[in-house]
Length: 139
Image (cartoon, rainbow, N blue to C red):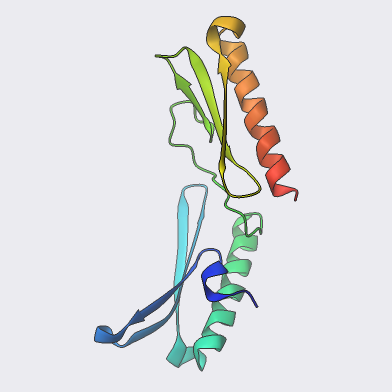
């Protein structure tokens, strides 16, 4: 089993003042959040609670159609382009593309609007983002 800190979407809660001890699972996908708390006491101990939390997370991801991976996956864009990792920088006249590399660091590049035109630059930026995300998730 992975170490406690490495379980994606699962956090340990030990709040002595409220006598709360257990695992909190939060699965986010397509703008919706599914969450559940697994008490050590109700599950028969810390390890049993963690196993229950992992099982619930995996089952929930499968049920809602979220791909099972321990890598970070972003499915909702906060940019006006509507595409995760692609944003228009009008001041600099380019689409900026960002992604997470295999080593966990951020990768970045940009596509010039002046050189390609706005539509073509956007398409190129989206293709770069799609390619980089596919590379990361296929490892």
